[in-house]
Length: 295
Image (cartoon, rainbow, N blue to C red; front, side, top):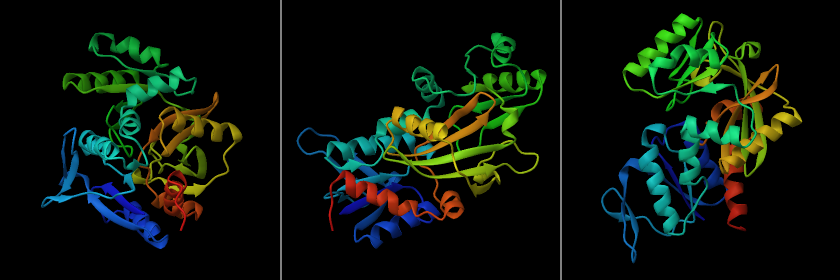
């Protein structure tokens, strides 16, 4: 097969591993920088071209690994590949839904997927009631576009929460406020889901004095055996967003497992090292199965 890896940085661990895995299985894989591709919209002869005017054709599949900063453009390219009849492992719609924290939280609540109590408001007039609505401080304040734990703040007191919320509002930034799950003790679980199945799970423990367990924020990863309920939750969350590949973050609470968020370009390094599983290979196998490819 001819596969395109649509991303931004060929030197990232995850991208290198996916390239290696595809080559090891005998496929031709080409790294495509999303920002260097451009498209021709035309009913008769739609095209995607690459820097210098090369027409991108004869691809069987695209693996999108789009960074948040290029979500809009990357999703437009994925739709264009789709128009050309190329299978994209995650669809543009699924990626943009997963990147919109407000929309995805609404989808989860609508589909009876339990999440920490979350609030969203436009006007700073109701900040006090917004804080009360999510059970008061300490609480989490998240930028809608945040990723890897960046743009996520813990406000310890109602006064601090008010100051942070109003500061964000004064610069017209959209934020979510979310109840803080104290009993999680800075731990969360990342489940790696491929085609509806949890293929690997790790526990992440935040550094001392830090509430975010993300590996990018210094969190430590270890292997974990998840419960049947947690497995079901991870699989359902990926299904609701229609993602073939997803990193699903879950937190253990006194109310049972709660869904934190779903990542459409989950990193491989932390979870492959923690579990010893070859997830890059599993991603390529999933494409082969989808396209009924046999060596």
